[in-house]
Image 1 (tube, one colour):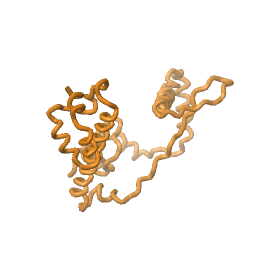
Image 2 (cartoon, rainbow, N blue to C red):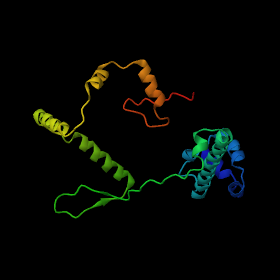
Image 3 (cartoon, helix red, strand yellow):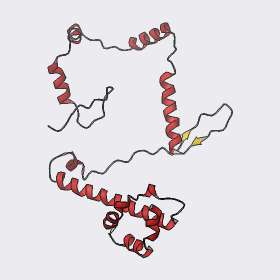
Image 4 (tube, rainbow, N blue to C red):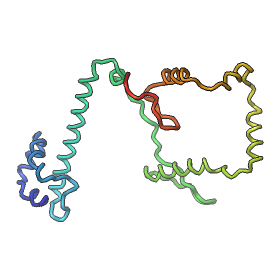
Length: 199
């Protein structure tokens, strides 16, 4: 049914739809048939018609994004908020990683991975292995290393500070910590945001 509707739609109208801004009218006409790019029957639809539908859907997506930006600017553009303060700032680009060195056996030349998905997998596996690398270390060796690391630390808490650290935390201290915490920052270990909504 979907392919039949597309085939019966004259090609000159498709070219008009591509050149003019009639995407919304075309979608309204095709809505009863629920035609989308994923619903196209690949065997019965020409490549030209698939490309036309793809271009129309891309155009709709970019139009929606522009409309959302206009709406957000209309609402928040003149108010003193994060959107307004960040609007004119230039974003600092991230440092790009073009390749990651692969794990190579001994006496083998260096090999690099430049596929982004495989690079992410290599990085994930590296950090996962790094966390589990010393998991099975003997407890006595572990305690010895901890004592050695702490032995280098020169500063110690005074007696009055030790007493304060031993007291239970009050609700007022929790409220003060939440009030002083930075907004729009990453969540902690328990994945709880510090702000639950605008005041």
